[in-house]
Length: 213
Ligand code: DX5
Ligand code: ZN
Image (cartoon, rainbow, N blue to C red):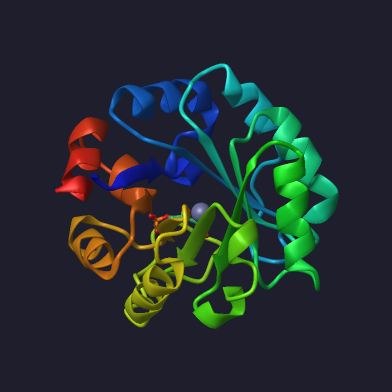
């Protein structure tokens, strides 16, 4: 099966967000990646559930909501009710990751967990039954347009082995361009997030297909 592409709307024109989402949908995006930041867990602020709700009517594609917020639990239901299909929390947030993942599923969304570059793959060994997607950060979260951190390729390989036959998607986020995409796919990734490589310059459809090939 070919790799899925999840353009990150962090690099879109925020003044025309509905239009941008329709454009990446038409250009072949598999997921719409939504970066939620709180100015506390990461040094940047973005959007909340109201924006997810407003975007819901602009696409049928899954809304892949990446929560870079601490705490996350008080907001999980709001994002699910807003129409998020996948809700990803960070493993570094809170003391009860297993509970957060179970909460996400109880609200009817798929449960994702993300690892910062310094967090080992092994931290997920005992939550895999409650996970639908693992998101490996290949930059320190907070901003688009950063450089890919090479050391994360080993982590992607480790997680691919840990996942085995389980129905868990392995997603990579940060510094993904046509060159780093190849290496992520070779290491075992099956979903690629890309902000600047999709929205940066040129045609969205061409940019998305360049990441797949
Ligand atoms: C970073 C975000 C990413 C970001 C990726 O904290 O989680 O989704 O938008 O942007 P690029 O692809 O430009 O690195
Ligand atoms: Zn993200």
